[in-house]
Length: 112
Length: 115
Image (cartoon, rainbow over all chains, first blue to last red; front, side, top):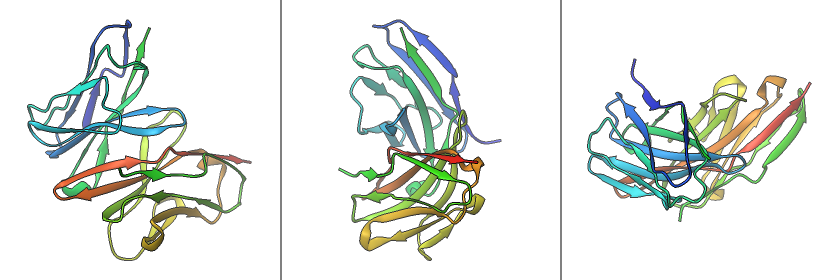
């Protein structure tokens, strides 16, 4: 079955360490997205990519980095510059022109 | 910048009451509109979506939404809520500009339905 796989489901890191969250899709979608979900703030867009080797900053890109070397993969790195990294991170992909979105099951990152 | 506003952050209703959740967006160009629901401890689920055509859209579980272009609004409605509708509801707007498009979410509305 086609879908989006995010791994791991839970992730713990020490403060000051960079951490990379995985997102893989086998839907053949061109566009992929990363969101951060915090209580009371909904989902906020971190980065998005419409095509391989190209990506754009979303509303809260500071402290994050991404790469899009393959169509299927859109990993997100949470750097030590991110001041409040503990959150739930959701990856999504979409068919052309945003006609429909598929969401992964998310990764809950806790930085201690 | 494009934005999506949900003005009701918390709503408490009794069973059988009617529901209307507001959603407004800032962009005057081409948009697709979505409502998602997140039940406690679960993942996002699509309730309904609007791309074109009839501005009154019917979704799952008895929900509907009306797109009013002149008001930049896409309000969610249900005539009679059930306890099982207790969840958080997110409005989302797909903004399309040139060849780029991105999905922006509102901050969500937490709905509590009392038995």
